[in-house]
Image 1 (cartoon, rainbow, N blue to C red):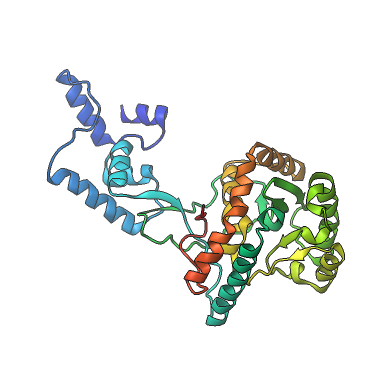
Image 2: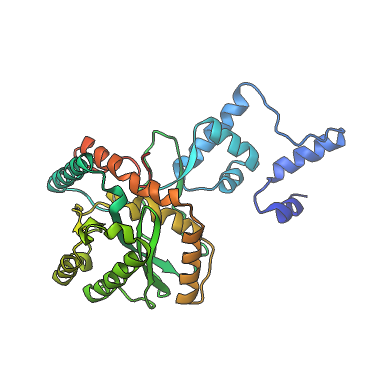
Length: 328
């Protein structure tokens, strides 16, 4: 019976002991398969078993836990919820910040926050970053773990590289996607490629955000990180020629980059389990994903910046909370 149920509903749905209990109940004309709520020690025993299991592996799924403590998934889920555990995204640890790094982060965030208070320029921000997209996204690394609301996320190692991947450059603002550029297999960004993308970006802005250019290109507040192609002399010359106002961004600060802390996480979730045949498949699927997003999705990502600048200041330049937390 156990094998038949698990074949139909998924491996680990019920344990052998649960099936034996059901059969015993059925023979007594008791067809209720719900877990009986019992007072006292049995419930505490389950809690303790779950906690002990999570001590060994916080990334375990409910199915793993159910099999490990010989309970059904429904019981495990109920106890996890009652104890305040949630299965949440873990935090990538980008860098061990020095005091100089922290001071620099705090100074730049204060500068940006002061500028924002003088003039709300958030609707004028265009931001860009790059993300690797893999051909095979089945069995992707599990980057989630069980923890309570007051617990810090686990530090997570980077995914093992494969030779089937494309680097996608994403340029977006509070209204949505402006430019998506998926590079050839295993190609990376350099200053020449990035400057060519910037030429394509200004055309996209002229076509889709013409109002943003009223009064001059300096109305565009451009935000990108400190990757080498972004800070190369050729790139700086290109940005000066375009007339963009380039916002300062402290090194080692993905928690202050909307693409890192806001956009890429749901993108990665959407990619899970998918297989691509090449760049055209990837480009088409990503464009479809962006098209389905409501406008307020992008607006919320950009509008969260002042709150993150403030939190960085309040934490004296240190990383704060959870990389993917978003402030209202």
